[in-house]
Length: 406
Image (cartoon, rainbow, N blue to C red):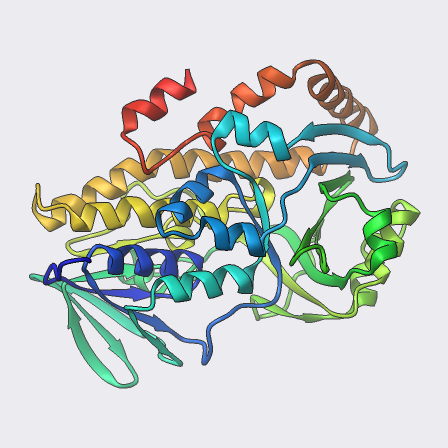
């Protein structure tokens, strides 16, 4: 049983990071109010990847069995050539990752994970349809403003995404940068024929100016597709919006027939522009701080956006529960401990996107040969290189992470 710490915390945003933080704070006896502008919890139906470093945090919330129930464990990471369909690289995940990194790798439907986190955060007050319009740091906490008026909290955490209101209050107005990439998300109902034809892998098709990722979620009842292409013609004002399957297919017309047939199976899809920001040198001020994409928006090319928010949440909850230093110092310590790792991954995700979209035939051939050799003859080296990412465990002392990474 937790003990009431006396703190009252506002979490702005009920996404993966915000609900993870709420659940972790409730478990530590901290009162939490979560503000969500949407009228109901949930997001556009889509899949996401939860790598071992995120699973380790979710285990502390008692979600190991639930995660195994709602998640799909991929067998391999398979990289395919956009035109020929040849498997350039195939790396084991199911058994190798458990042994190397101490936890499984899951594909989950976003709504399923949100549901688990909402139940874990049952002791928090969640106010849906309640947009925060302003945040004002002050002595002993911060004021937030909604349509219902002003309210004071001991701590305010902005988990409200790349267009964060809290970030704007702390760092002033600034425009996120359009990366020149637009993505489609689609969920394809899977029947027995599709499950026979499509491997239970995380499959990535690499091509000129774009790539496509697909994997199963919900006990392989749905195939999640994320298709990214480069364009300089993004003119829509909205960040994300419905699209048509014909628009999706048109972007990949000349790709491998088996892939285009798969895209044509989609019954609906959404399109959104990928925006980016440079890493921040400092995140918060006073008793206001940031978490997840509000602090370090992560392009999806390493599948670490949700997991970095989950890691943030654990470190921040530990900092707020500690009574060893003043609360403001604890928040700055959280930001300092997370800043280097998240900034490095922000930049690595950018570089990964450029590598996947090689348009020159010679450059793409060299990349494919390198990936082929690594997957066939450098398996142990590849697993060792993944220690700093997947083997990382925010739930243990920092020294153990440094030892594992060596």
